[in-house]
Amino acid sequence: MTEDERDRIAGGYRAFVEEAAPTSPLYARLAEEVAGSDDVLSFLADLPVGKRQPNLLFAALRYLHGTPADGAQLRRLVADDGERLRATMLARATQTNEPARCGALLPVLALIEGPLALIEVGSSAGLCLYPDRYGYAYDGVPVGPRDTVRIDVTTSGGVPVPGDVPAVVARIGIDLNPLDPADPDDRAWLRALVWPGANAGERLRRLDAAAEVAAREPATALTGDLLDRLPDALALVPPGCTVVVFHTAVLPYLRSEARAAFVDRMRDLPVRWIAQEAPGVLPGTGERRPSGWGTEFVVSLDGRPLAVSAPHGGRLEWLPDGLGASGR
Ligand SMILES: C[S@@+](CC[C@H](N)C(=O)[O-])C[C@H]1O[C@@H](n2cnc3c(N)ncnc32)[C@H](O)[C@@H]1O
Image (cartoon, rainbow, N blue to C red; front, side, top):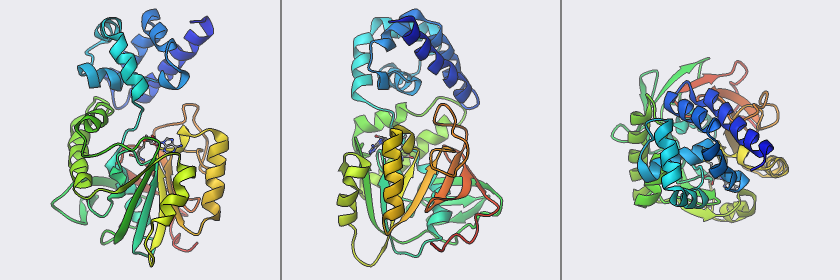
């Protein structure tokens, strides 16, 4: 490991401290420990560049051993079980799937004439493909079915809360590695990706319940790159519906040329396009943060920003010029 490499990896973990501190103080402490541990940094330096990030290391540790209580335990686990940890980090990826993100999608979907065919690119286990199967409470006002996953949203800025959920006639996901919501091992990995912290219990309950919904009514899952497989997804759409291509927390995974090509494609296709991504990931959606992530997402329809949402759901702020966006 060169000194440069060590500093780069440690710098990534230090940046993560700030990101994790508000919701997961334990992860913030663990990241600080990693940044100061030569042994753990060497372990990480032996992994390919795209496999060294905090989310992946911590999820792999939790998947194999449960959450490390502190830095000393983390260092011990890396020293004693490095081979299995390495194999897990190579085999798995950060594919956090948060169904609560549907709370931000629903008011935007309601602006689009249905019935809808949903194509989600970067769908992970596809849990955001069921916005019509979940129940919502916007500032306590219920929307949609009651006896199912419940998604609470606090709103501001005059969110046009719909009276009901949309009619969905097709659910198609594209992912480099689609996870199977019915598979116990994939579910265990999805659970390991949820950060420990005050809202972890609620997130895990929601994840389990949403995986049950998805397992009962499987979506079509296409394996591969989102641009490559988009024509296949479009070919599966039944006639007589509006196609909505959407993505949440996906585009930072793409290199900038691929991201630009995807944006061009979305502008050309005769579909509606919803994005829920960190600011600046799409043109005209604010300043890009160095980490690629951040503490809020921008929700846009056909490239036009409509709202700001909390990355794991729960909060939605409609932007002042976000109304009247139903026309293309
Ligand atoms: C952070 S997860 C988000 C999952 C889901 N959209 C959500 O918001 O809960 C990002 C997903 O994008 C997928 N992904 C990344 N790059 C991709 C690409 N080029 N083509 C297809 N899927 C991709 C990853 O495999 C991962 O499952």
